[in-house]
Image: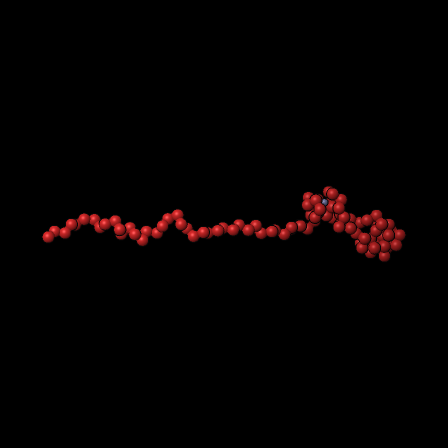
Length: 89
Ligand SMILES: [Zn+2]
């Protein structure tokens, strides 16, 4: 009685993990809405110009006519104006 000595049969390859059946990894790329960051001194309208405080003509006239109280009015009448598009804020 001689039993065949050989390599083990191929059924040991059972239990091999099936390839190509990855679980559905759904990558959801969510674009987070970025808040509009308006830097200080940057115009919110054109986004390029710089907003600077300017004395209005009326404020200057008040400052001259009603000095020194007019100066206070002059500061109160200051307006922020873009030096590029001229938008007042
Ligand atoms: Zn502007």
